[in-house]
Image (tube, rainbow, N blue to C red; front, side, top):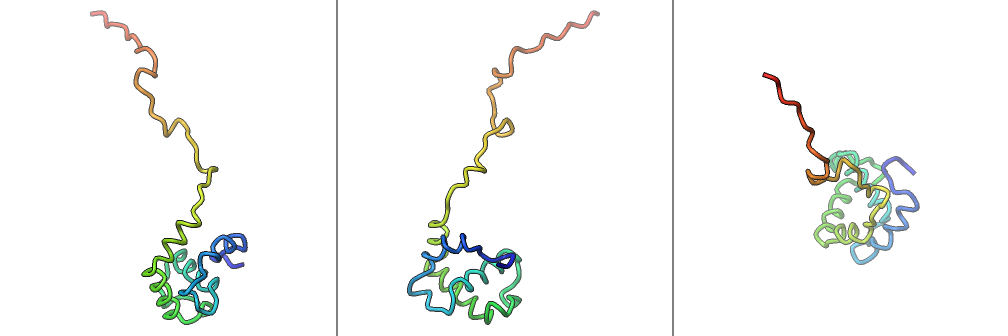
Length: 111
């Protein structure tokens, strides 16, 4: 597995949502990896490595999937909350000012 590509576990989650009429292409996994590579590296379509096939073919297929709502459906289907990131700590909680305790009494200046 290369750096910007899906692992086996990730592909098992994504694969069922890539099947259908719009997926007649050579290899869905290669195509999804090409799109992820482009998104993760920020390159233009023309700079896509040759191992993903002709850049224009990948770009056209990406647009077809986008118009058909495949990407949106895929993202909705694979979203799963990661409860490890759900934290509540003191930097996120605002307490009522009365919770701070009694106001400190300042001594009056002698004058």
